[in-house]
Length: 483
Image (cartoon, rainbow, N blue to C red; front, side):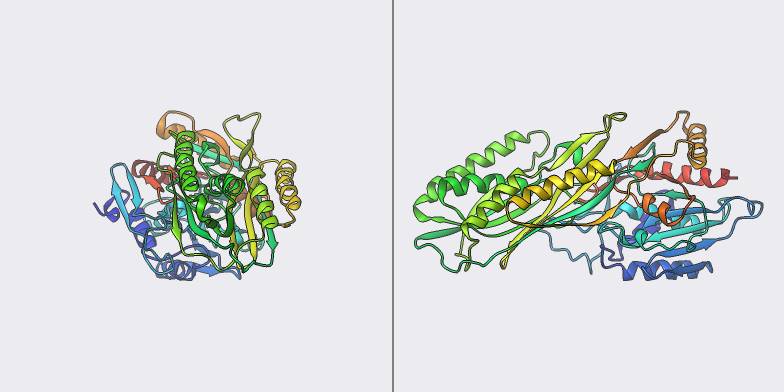
């Protein structure tokens, strides 16, 4: 079945159209123009601001003119992730979405349900001539995934509404009223490459692949392996036992995705080949056993390749390896009042060694700003001991819960009317734009919700078809009952 034939038809047709338009973070001109054209085609007031956010205003339906303005909000970019053996250009190629039982998935890439489903639902509301609602502002923000640039650039007054319904959550049946803040940490070491390869050395490419990866906020508590960590866990004994020399490393690709793949090129003395290969086989068995039931697809391999032209100086190499092995990664602390929710975490997202520069990039998240920065400081200290320059950037605030929120009360009542039970009210460890938008729009009453999306930021991403239908019915009911 084509996804455009699913119900609700208008929503899925919009999502199908979104999938056909390349819109990875940093390359959103086409999707922005699509949204502008969409708003204009409906003869609705359509605006863009200086950072590329799109705002579409729809008047109230008859009899609802006195209802408050509701801001329906999503982001227009998607995380571009694919397996290394897949030929897909996110800047040119459409997403190939398909139905797989109860889910919609994509062929070997991220799907973009985060946050394309929310965007598609908002478009369907704007199109509808049947839903009763007050004045609506559809705010679609730019480049959320790479640093929330659209939300950060939002100016007071661009949006007039004071009720915001963010559609970027991924657990149906839960209403989110708070989220973690974050900060990027980057460690760099510049060094002079060595051009002389020890005589008699041979070279190997070391590969870690097949990991699940996932969203560094939503999935960080699941105990999944970090490909960068696994790679350097092997490199340390390779250096100590087999005189390995490091030439090149590439691991991970996005700051907010748990890295699924990592690669290195090393040299070793030719006479150490058999023992090196044996150690690699043992390591593969060890990590598959260590992550059994969590990472059943883990692959670790070494293959002989041509000698590289340069090497990392031994002292620099050893400092880098020790720092990467030592640095904190993963969930660090859980909320006392909500023990299932991560309070602070770090994701060693991207590592590279090439052309005389080592770089490691982390995204540190935290509901408590002090603990967030304390964890970031631990990373800084670890790499400072290795001689690295460490910089903090892109810090964004968390969103503190307001349990007296009027929109929370409305959405709780409507959920109970529709489904006979109360929704879960929660905070999320992932970063949402609400905290930033709230700072730009004082007095905004906000909530976040959405259908079930699993494994966002990875090629396993999928969205539940039935939950999308429930999400749509719920959205309609809410809009009709905000008085």
